[in-house]
Length: 247
Image 1 (cartoon, helix red, strand yellow):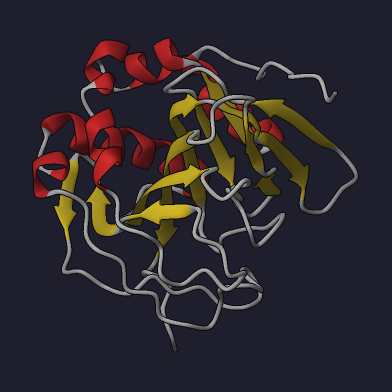
Image 2: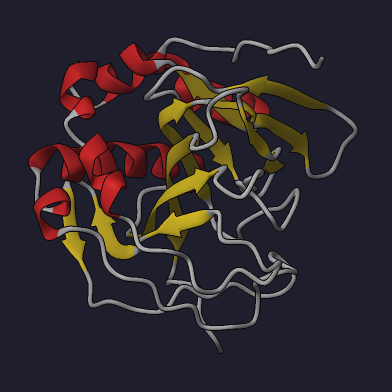
């Protein structure tokens, strides 16, 4: 059996330095909560939103294991503005499985994205992006995902190890129930080194400099006696200049 390796947690105040030095940083629940000036129990209030995610209609591997929503924002300093619903689009160079097509997903619940805590989260992560690339507006795509094992296996990253074509990626674990697997792997994009670990604690946050590292999460399977397990994440991407889209 593959051992479950603990994430290499750091103090949230070291996140910018770790991103610059290694291209990734991992915060535990307390660290993420401190980053946004709250406590983990306040983040728990968001969990119900994952129970209302519609199926992903675009899975090209024929699976039915993924549910999601998608909304977009522009973050400039402390100002967070939601923009009109738009398609999620990636070039095939970054997503060989689903790239090159416009994928229209249902938007996130207005009651969620209007919360001051949500806007604080985007603003504070925008500061991390500015620490990497300089202060500027950030074009943010937000994706709450649920990967389930009702069909026997769920694939958090069906496209495999990849980059997203952005500047900063945040992968936040919201819940993990009745599953095994789901190991996170982060590799240097231009080198031989990598690290693997499993995010098990809700509100663990993985921050990635997308220009420097490649990432993936291995498939999940149900634990014995629990055929309805799932893994819930929030993926946030921050991109300079503009949203990704067809030229």
